[in-house]
Image 1 (cartoon, one colour):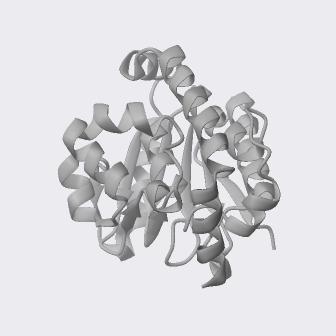
Image 2 (cartoon, helix red, strand yellow):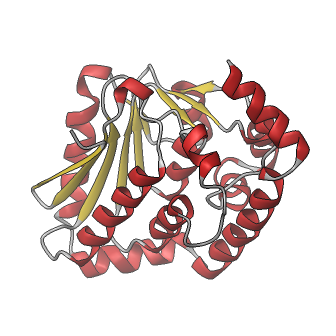
Length: 245
């Protein structure tokens, strides 16, 4: 069974991260499929919104570390970062439904979503500093904009987990929804977006997001520093300890 699945419903492309036995950890093949299904949906006039979710009781535990380290020659065309730049370039709205852990990129990708809903089991974390790494996905720019500088400092420099109530209070997510209602609610909101006038929706998103070139520039700076940090002695020691657990 595919680890990334999609189905189209009422103008919404529902994309599911489907690797529950590995806590929906993302490997490079999965990033390639995510990018492919987003780009396909962008060019399909029958698709007007995206909904991203995880299978089971986890959104995603982040990168599959072993797989990532085997393919650590980073650049804009690396599958992980190609996916992130695809998120930046989307012209159609993206909604996320978060249940359980949303770790690392599982949290930073939410900064590129238009609407985010979570249930009470959701746990967010930006643990880059704990692995001797730096933020990605434009988080060093987008997170302070969203939650304020002091809160962004706390989240990125301490790297500690936080729950859905805290995420909602700081504005990272739109609403906390009961677990048994999460998917239906997120899909209903996605369908509402898909039914809006598409050109007005596209332009409204552009205006709301501001200078995309500035975000791209920050993402490239992060990528450069991330690649350097990944080869550092302190990062190698952290990854060795992580993989030995």
